[in-house]
Image (cartoon, rainbow, N blue to C red; front, side, top):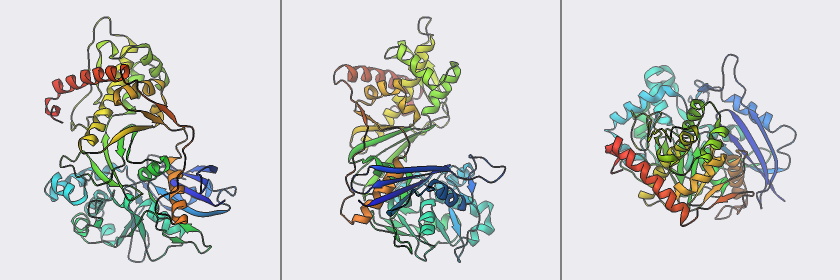
Length: 479
């Protein structure tokens, strides 16, 4: 039995799983937080990438990697590790969640003439998280560092390079490269003109490997696969195929689906990423997801579990109460300056259970409309994988199939999907087959809507939501 391992280096921790290369059965697992310098916390947006190696070593303690023949790496997307011409780190790595690049992203948008040229160039409108926005920020606020940078690696690229002993040849993959803002999943090529627009000069860029192409071997002969970004790795770990979508309920909502071609959306709502299999992973995002539930729970003096219990004491439609959940403005639909709206308050409806139900329905209706954006661009969505802590709430699991109108799949808890996807990629590179090995995902919960009752109820709730949205935000009526 061959053993492969997957490493997922996220914003705050490293997860490792060792798996049977043929079946995907998890044999061993480990995790460790990234060590933080004194005086800093997990919200820091600048780190020494060496901390990722220390965390990896801690997570692999106890012989976790013993007998492993191949390793895949998943990393947080959109980061920036800037190296000089000698391969020396110029400054601490910038992480995806660094808020300082918001102005730089807006400046880049204007510099190229608005959203449309960017969509045509890279299949997306680069936001503050994108690597290219960080390059622009460095050029403006740290010009000396910017001038020294000769090459940029993403977190997973850097980790792969370290595992291989710092080879001269740098590599990446399609999935992670598609989040830089200067590699196009539409053409499969880098755009050095965009790099120069942001940084002021061109960069040495990593080679983009094919899905099953190894990055190399360690001196000990251990195969290292191409690696990829965390969403792409999670897709591979979940075994997603055409027709499968993910709705991830973090503070924000992330919605993506496997598709056979790049999506070019002139509105900029859809970001056209590549996946880790040679296909594509078009994505939309909402600014409001689980945070809507947390805020409502706090207002009602309870927690997420208490909010779920309350919501199930109400009925579909929340006794006439509707929440437009735009607490932080909204990205999908484009309502950056909107606020939340709660309507339908009557003497008989002003009860905690109806407010709780309206919060859950409002959040899910907004996500369902985001799914419809993907469908509107020809992306097939036949079932939805529900991820995130809020996705495990009984109220969310009961209501989601009604409002999505589709079977909802809830994977087992643990959050190791990206690490498992990295391991599956390693098994694929080890086997050298045209397609990745078929790994069953155990312990799935499938929640299918009743084709008559649930779909009718869900349709009525969604119509109630859409009518209120169009009334308060008529500019969204045609979206």
